[in-house]
Image (cartoon, rainbow, N blue to C red):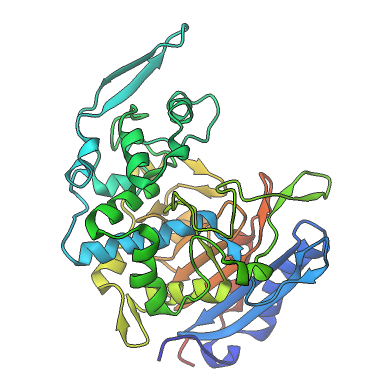
Length: 409
């Protein structure tokens, strides 16, 4: 059964010494005061081979992190939202080449930003066509995020109080009333598209996004600590969120996405709202490696998983070097549905298997699934920083050295 039963590293072709080097690289960041703490998890061949908790859950109290500590995973919500979308795809409710307006009529007759004149007037033109679902799920639809100061379309998102919407339907309507940043398919920009997907999930399923994910993903996978909030009885397990103020100073901060981590949010963010544990997220990652199956239950079809973990960007776009955080699109490094896909790891300069799918989160969490090597890795930290250590790239390199044989040894 490929459900993360414990195994010795040598039973699945991994080196104990290599795994210890991975731990040491993360521990060094804790020892240097760059991180309060971290939890990492490695599985291969469907078997759990290492889970390490290091450092502190909270610096002030001195409470250590534990394997079941809860973390805000922010944008690591996005792959889960893609899987929720693919459940509906398996039901025949939408297709990648559908116009978004087929499922959200408010996205018909969109306009596109042209220029902002010196007097502040925004000039727009009609969109040549509406964005497709594929573009919505690859950040190529022309949407903004409302987070970049000075970007004209993001400024409009803030003026329209998009992120103050009462629910996902209202958020969708507000976004659709604003111009696109570019013609659909003409460029790439990190966007609010995954939150628009949340509105589509609610429209197509008739359920709230949290209820849909609980019923279709979290429940079947046994992800008992994953949700859009942390209930009070689990609050003692929620790791403190820190902001890097520079000079080795970590400042505890509140969640920037919501006022209260303990209460269900009015606006459930498919782009960044989940909390989870390393163990829970590994169950989700293993489901992807299992091509949609977990413990005898079918969550997604193999075809749906392959679509999620296939690059959907054209070659010309991969040449452009688009960047968000520590993710830089380049030859060999494309975008699947709501996450990165390595089409040519050698060209991308990353020692993972072809077809590896990964993403990260604003507080430094990271994961990847590597079908070619039958391996998954989950890393959990809580650090908001513009200069966070590149732990995903660092651990991918070290994990490559830890592989000494096939997973079935």
